[in-house]
Image (cartoon, rainbow, N blue to C red; front, side, top):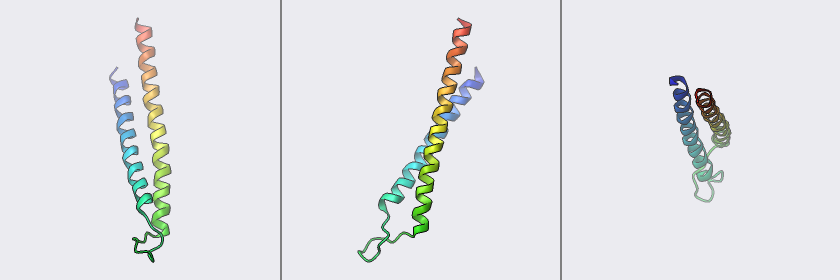
Length: 84
């Protein structure tokens, strides 16, 4: 059972890390302004592109970790059914 516990713990940690990365990337995108003529802070196209890529990577990481949590939970359920 110790291995399954670690799978769930690692899945949750990974999901939370992906959520944090997603929030940071979203913040960068939301607060960016590509036009500095209106007084906004100019963000380079490269920075904006990197933020979008980070957002997509974190989305995929969150999905993978959610699947890991789901699989770990199903495995524990199966083991309990077998034991019962």
